[in-house]
Image (cartoon, rainbow, N blue to C red; front, side):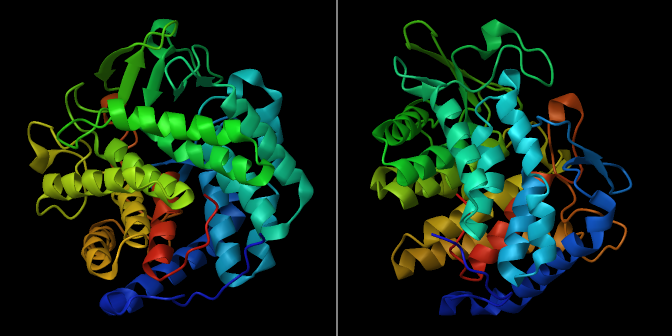
Length: 396
């Protein structure tokens, strides 16, 4: 079904949320205008991470974040109907052809890459090539499914953008992969092939069993025996410690399970999103923006992660849309609080020198990448604002 363009204005906002409409609406308008004014600077490059002057460092051709700017452009096209945004997004199609042509460029992030580019283009325009490219990507993602453990292999031992030890990569799942299941569910809807749905459900079930702890915190990664599929142990890659709770990982899971519940109607997935969201709210305390890991020794002075706040807000609005009115009001209140924190402390949409939307993202604190703009934070910020205003048509 082709997505129709809409106005900036709220699509259908529950009465309980109306006090936030004007502020969220203004932020969404500023975000779209920021995309418009930075277009001549960014061109057809794709932002990777912010620089100290709030400019961008740009992606190599196969980077996992290569689609997030395109996703923003498709959202802006949907909101405005302005062909300038559509043409800028469409001009990036060759990048995704390139990913499909290079085996080492292909890993679990095919879902991120193709949902926000080729699936978006198919839904927005009905053109056949992006649909074909997205279905090819879905087939490649399906090939990463390991039925013996019911999971999608996350990383390659030798990815295109740098080496990784085979003993670390093999048999490993990560929280981020929940966002990539959308491509499999979309391919199932397009083709009716049950194996797409079975792989997505299998991975979601395994994630719930092994990444979500009994106390509703989460591991970032979990390791399986690659031969037998036997569960081995939970570990971290970007968090503070194996036993800690990395805030963006928790956010990926909230959004991912809410998305799986929306597509499948499986209430177990919806309950998982509830539990993870309630735990995140508890762990945040009075913080305006999530700390990068909820278990850091001195959170008062630790980096914040605006991307975790944006992802979580988008996921919680989606969760709210699947609940009865009374429960939805509670979840919307938490998501509104997350957006307020981003607007109060991280908003760059009014800064003419900034090329992105949000400050204070934490890409990989252990590697020294924090307090910066992040294109995925910007994408989910726009998605969250739109969901808060009642929009329901996205590319997931």
